[in-house]
Image (cartoon, rainbow, N blue to C red; front, side):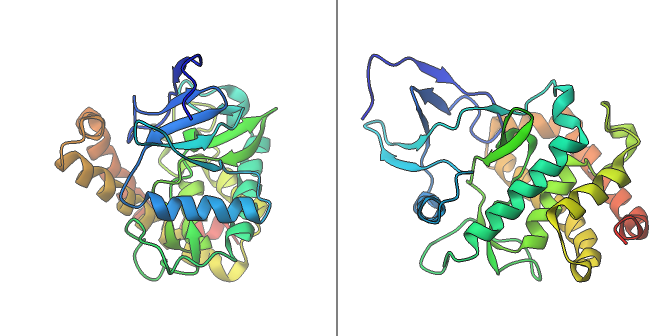
Length: 264
């Protein structure tokens, strides 16, 4: 499957697989994981129902790497371009996530072994992406068109995925921890994301609780990986992320009512 004439191009993105994701022609090569068969089944379902916003699983190469289709476009990595922080870009991420949830709603996760699911009451319902970070969304012409990196996907819920995406894209944190054009826009961007997704009013109070739990769950994953020797996550935590995460968690507790009021 690997064409020797095609150069290997390192793809820059997240921390978990940093330095291990390569583009070869119109394919992407990534490390396999114990839960990869579940991810491959998920991607197969998305393709079968006509969802174009995810890569296709193409097989395993001779080096034991999964082979996915390459999705042309731009994933958002630092320094963030100004267009990626606009209201239009934010709304398009919400629309993409809504379309993904519609496509995945008919997928049965029961036969497969998944990564750890989020805590109750946010587990079950559908397979959520669980990591809608900026570098996991592909844009074309300023609009979000695809999700990548489904390594953490597992049975969860719409509310959980919206909480994850809103937390990262708004971003939901104190202004002193925002050093770009989104500073001072947190409440307005939070409302815009939730409205653009179309989250029912009945789910909005639960969403604020889900944001805090998602923050804690995500940092538990990072902390566990670091404790198990993952150098990238260790460097990330040692660079001040651990202390910042605790301050943000406290902010969620202090501002929960303000966040709920912003969604009414």
